[in-house]
Length: 151
Image 1 (cartoon, rainbow, N blue to C red):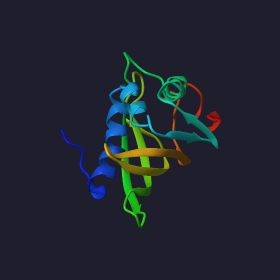
Image 2 (image 1 turned 90 degrees about the vertical axis):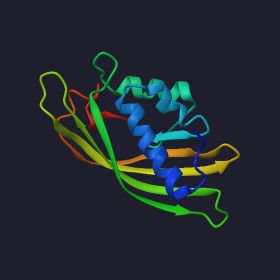
Image 3 (image 1 turned 135 degrees about the horizontal axis):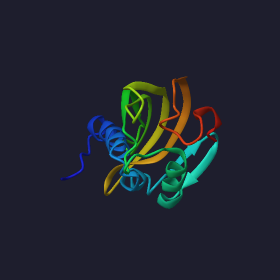
């Protein structure tokens, strides 16, 4: 499938593709979305697919390889730079989960600040900042450490 060049489609597709891969437990494919970028967590820049993959594996509990979550990414506010080859996006995320012994519930909700660029291969992430976590429920079945201790 050819990548879409229209940022109004390509950027939301990147947001949703990340969520889909993450929820499928395919952390490698999710990390590959950042092969030209970095992830920022608590002010720390994590670059490179292997380092990003390690970060997520250290954070997230899985059950037979899957986190049993759904990342709902909503309210994307996309701004394209004047040249048309870079963009920023603020969006909100909500993670729901149904794990063994836990009913379907909201785990947490927060915000992303993403930056994108377009090159000959299409649009890609350059930075994803986990901007903030606004609301936290019971994250004990989702994260290895409580969300308040992630850095």
